[in-house]
Image (cartoon, rainbow, N blue to C red):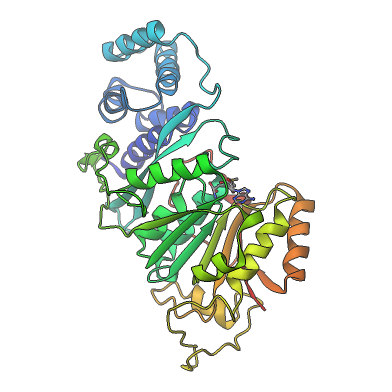
Length: 406
Ligand SMILES: C[S@@+](CC[C@H](N)C(=O)[O-])C[C@H]1O[C@@H](n2cnc3c(N)ncnc32)[C@H](O)[C@@H]1O
């Protein structure tokens, strides 16, 4: 299969499994068929998407997709596969209501991170890491924590693009939501992964996701996920895909509302790296969030158990600048050629969409008052685009900040 078609087939399957808008999935179907959804493309969609998703994926989504597919094929006066008609008519009887987002509807999405092994090579192989996630289709469920927000997709791309920055590090995330960032941290072999959220229903959904991804939380037995059965390791559209299942570390999940997180509990965590995705949005919570960050970043009280070796070789050296990507701290972090280099003090990475400039300015003022240094890394540390099929994900609006103690 030629390269363009291989890519279209991979993007088609990935977009379908991630429950991308049906128009997006249709665009890949068209591109696979050279402009129209041919019988061969329909067969591909049936074999690799629909037949595997029956009974597993969100039925209204599948019904809507089938409807779009059939309408488009019919409008082009092409033949529709019998299987597509049959399944759609079953849905017509069993699923009367077309509304896909009603109440707290949960769905299982599969986020596929696509790693090109060698983009310059004509028959480049693509390694695929698939993360099944239970999430809500209602953005506000679980205090917003049951949805997958773009900032966590960006943070995940960041972690997977610069694995050496996180491997062998103790990582702690605030406002972890569905747990995707923690799964990526485990994947790059962080030595310890601690996730937290202030919402209890979010926390229980997060634990479910960790279990589904073969990770154990402190109070759980490890489980083998049946959800991964949806995927095969076989060729999809001629492109080798594989699910990287490894022995993943235990993940600690904490109920940690920023308002009442005690100083002693925070000091006991001692993370090397603190992460937060889309946590800067509620002005009322910001003073509490900044308090939590400043305790975790405190050089004197939050130092990690890892020995600290400065770039000059001195143990515990702490006189690096932290005011830009040219600084010593960031130079160490920027060295993405495989040598992340040591970090001298805890630092925080926050990914965010700035929806409200006043809220963000308020955050900056609080950061300044707390004597924290903040650096905008957006232009300097660009993660690889690992979700190229996800048209609903606007990477261009993403910002990445580094915070450290002054
Ligand atoms: C917009 S969601 C982002 C979730 C996840 N990081 C992501 O990007 O997909 C914000 C998260 O912060 C959590 N959160 C909001 N306010 C909080 C607070 N005061 N204390 C602790 N967690 C809070 C919410 O429960 C939610 O999980």
